[in-house]
Length: 204
Image (cartoon, rainbow, N blue to C red; front, top):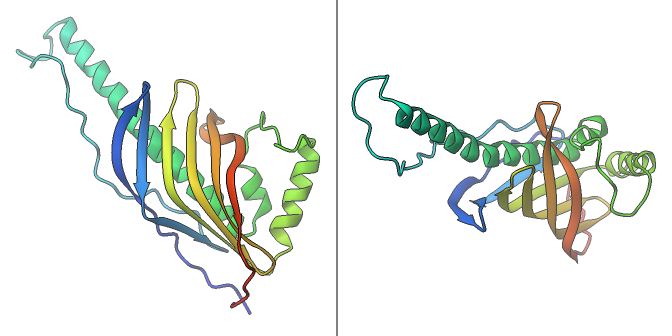
């Protein structure tokens, strides 16, 4: 039977706070990727307004250096809140490509500097991933409890990943680092923090 497309349900940001100088965005709910399907659209969310701690402005457009500092601070705040949204959208598109069993699109989310955790060469790792992505009759990937931490040179994400196919099921806590490469966020490292194997069920 053909595979039915199911749209990805995207979680909405629940809270925004700082910890040790890193910006953290928590997401509640569940993001589900079922293949094949189109890449998820960026969630339509209201812009987060950051309260300025600077003194109120007075005068016109040429109010002096303080005015310029306020503008730069506003731009920095806007960039800081956009990075978690973009990183999260990248993760959802990565999961969608995996569930769609599209290996070329899936592998394109990994940076040129990505090193496989099992010490295999990049070509061996890619060959193994292609085999695992294309062999199952179907694949479903669910991402939940996504937490984004923004650092100076990279973005870190921790999330609960549920995988299901006709041959295997598991639930893992995964941690990935993303870097800005070729005008998009790409995965620099990926590791499993905790893993729970689940009984295999086939009901599709």
